[in-house]
Length: 261
Length: 284
Image (cartoon, rainbow over the protein chains, first blue to last red):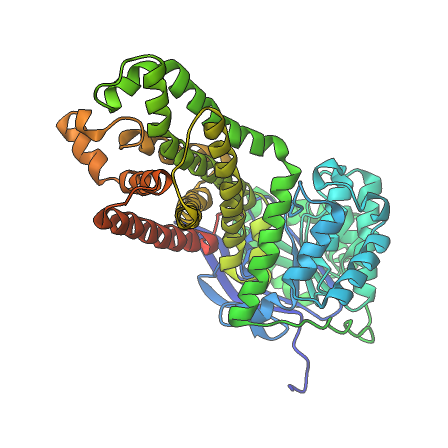
């Protein structure tokens, strides 16, 4: 056992190219255990790419990425045993019922039968899905599907959870419901890396905010710290200031603000 | 959050790894595939209906004339239809398997382009099980569907001459053919960039039996087509099915050729599908 426990996520000098386009350019990022980090940035900034590399979906071109001390490239199976991922596209099988979707996860994670059943019942209750237990995925509303998607992610009790734009397209109530679920999760000690286009979401949930712009980290701080540094009233203003296309060349200068964290 | 919040203890997992784990995952994914088939009965009706309609079309529209062409001395009309029903039933059964393979490709492409395979790839799931579940489900579906189509042929007057051993042989042949066609179509579905492509590519599996000995004797074709027809995989497969159904002997070379095609194409499909499973899809 190492004397200091490994951070939930530790990324150093991460590079990723698609063809001749650089998507991630020497990205450094650390997510401490039991905290939420929100990854912000314009479309195409590299948020989903970062999540894809960390969740063993795609290889990086350079640098290292570790989840709870396990290198994602060298020990992908060990990483897969520790993580849960809710991607942008729904992983709910539209033809299976809510219960069957959850049980599919329990079976694939090789949970013992009784423990799997108990876990599914718990999650149904916790996510308010008990009444929809026998409905097929295709019969659920968008908000319910998203909840089921997250519940499926949690069947195995993952220690690190990735949420890639989890509330896109949801109405305000469904969004708040999902935020409550994430808060409960983190209160239980789970670490979360979240990408979002909603600054309010980051403000509400995140202990730390990391802003990506053109594949680089241009800021990394607490929401309060970011607003103070940029003398801004909201994270929206911070976001706009940091990701101004006219300031693209000064991205490196903005990089210094990571030291504030 | 404070550092005091310790992570919840990980759940116990029986986690058999290696062969045991892969088998467990394959059983789980097969159960999912069979559930999906049950939940979408109109698809099964369509998959069985297509070969039945083809059978009726070929027997009752073309059969009177074609029958006289496949057996010398037969007069066109009712006698022709009877002979032609005998002649094409094996090929229509193979078409049934091809039609199910095509539907399977669509299911696989939906898994691949949606979020389901992405989720499974982030889990410690044996990769062979993800596509394998579709394949085993399709083999079961094929055996049931071919039995139904064969039943329709019998209602129309088809009389198979197979004995018990022959039926067992047929079950084996259809399992193997279904395995071959579905691994190929699963690979096509997995490699397809969209669900639309996945529904088009496997069309070749539906068309190829027509360029063989399934519907007319290859001797009646022009040389170039005949050479192709004699050497394409469906011809020996159809001849084996024809022989087993009729209860006549199948030439050893034909049987071995059919087996070699099936095994070779299954391995090809499996390798191709496996390569597509981990191939990164560009999402940012």
